[in-house]
Length: 95
Image (cartoon, rainbow, N blue to C red):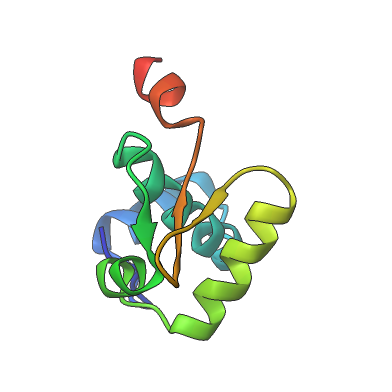
């Protein structure tokens, strides 16, 4: 699942039908969270996440710090670098 600045044709059709455009900042917040959740609580390093989402490292780092501060993401310090995960992964996948 890679983040994209391009809107897919299906998204464009959905926007026209609903009359509501996607909020890009919300999508940018949800995409890393969904990726972490899909890993079933297996931590991921910042480099893995930036490559998978194709987003700038600095912006993703700031977002992950914010999500960590608010309790949505956990940061575990490994050797020298933190790894990120979410405790909600298993619960959300079970729904």
